[in-house]
Amino acid sequence: MTRIDAETVPQVGVLAHTLRPRHVAMIAFGGIIGAGIFVGSSAAIHIAGPAVLLSYTLGGLLVFFIMRMLGEMALAKPGYGSFAEYAALGLGRWAAFMSGWLYCYFWVITVGVETIAGAKVLQPWLLQSGLDAPVWAIGLVLVSLMTATNLFSVRIYGELEFWFALLKVVSIAVFIALGVAFIVFFGPGLAGTYHTLAGDGGIAPYGWPTVLTAIPIVIFSMMGSEVATIAAVESERPAENVARAARTVAFRILMFYVLSIAVVVAIVPWRTLPVGISPFIVALGAMHITGAAPVMSIIVLTAVLSCLNSGIYITSRMLHELARSGDAPRLFAITGGNQVPRVGILIGSVAGFLAATASIVSPNGVFLFLINTSGAIILLIYVIIAIGEIRLRQRLERDGVSLPLKMWLFPWLSWGVIAGIGVVLVLMATEPEQRTQLLWSALSAAVIGIAYFLRQRAAASALAPG
Image 1 (tube, helix red, strand yellow):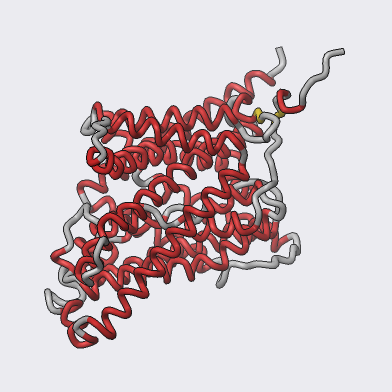
Image 2 (tube, rainbow, N blue to C red):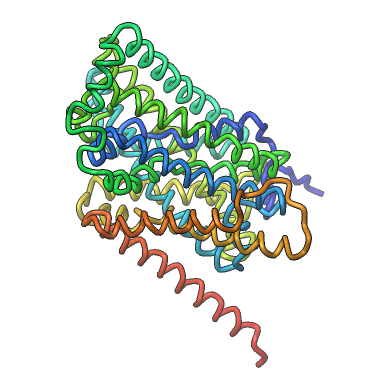
């Protein structure tokens, strides 16, 4: 009889559990640190001025409460999977179908965006080395490298992401330390700092309502905390790791976002910060830190590669989870001997690269359409998570289940989070550019909803007698 090597036998529904607590902790710790803070924060500052600090605080609270809800559900019902499955516990299978497919779509577009961002960071360096490579070719190399790391094993993904996240964490910590030292010892002092903050139109130069107007940009830049609920599935103690991430997210938001942006607007007059250029580079230049631009470019590239790496990982795992529950083709649930969903990884990588190609071929056509249809998806997913937590918590309390981790002031704070997200969605409707994203994202949700209805109808027809 021919011996069959276990490495060649495909397995359905089996994922590795080789991620260590330090991997999950650092993935959660660095998950919210992406190009959104290093570059995108300039757009939020342009909208609200120095008052953007309040925007980051409010946006951070929304994300923190969502993570608290996920931690509560994970410890109450351990072993169910990602946030999509926990939403389904409270609301039914439609919640997992909707949030799972919307999340996959969101991350495919994100992979495309980060691919182009990374290629554009690398292109000038390659030109200086005498290599005139087009953006699409550089992007293909980046996608291929991150795809390879995901195909090897989840342990390799976790280790790479650990070091990516560690570099981002250390970089921001050093930036904050340098900024504080400059303000207190080497710069204009506290009096001069206050003048920088309030000397050009006050703390809120365009009025306090702009604090709320900037929150959509802030929320999008903070997206990533929920990644810990997906990575934790492949660790030894998923529920405990999710709960740990939920408990520490407030500290991460305070330190990385609020403190770093506070340093920026305290050193550089906010109106002089150009949109689309990293305010961190401008602030380091104002502190007369030599070599700031190339160092920050390396950090931005690290953040981009981290997001690209995680985007491919997240897409494949969400497809795997959807397939296991029958909400996606079963092919996505197959894993090889190294217990990684290879088909999902390849499909996610190819789809992301196609999105990146669209940004080159049709930046104002196909790619703009993709961006608009995914712009508000994360907010819709957060609403599903929050409502699912309320329903599940009410059921558990009726059954007398003891909860080791609880959302505070239930149910009022949970409903307050939903109301807060509703305010953000209303504010998006008042801004022409964001209104377009809101409408197209709602259309994306409607398409997924119709797909679920047709799937249920087909399943009912197949079970009908005769």
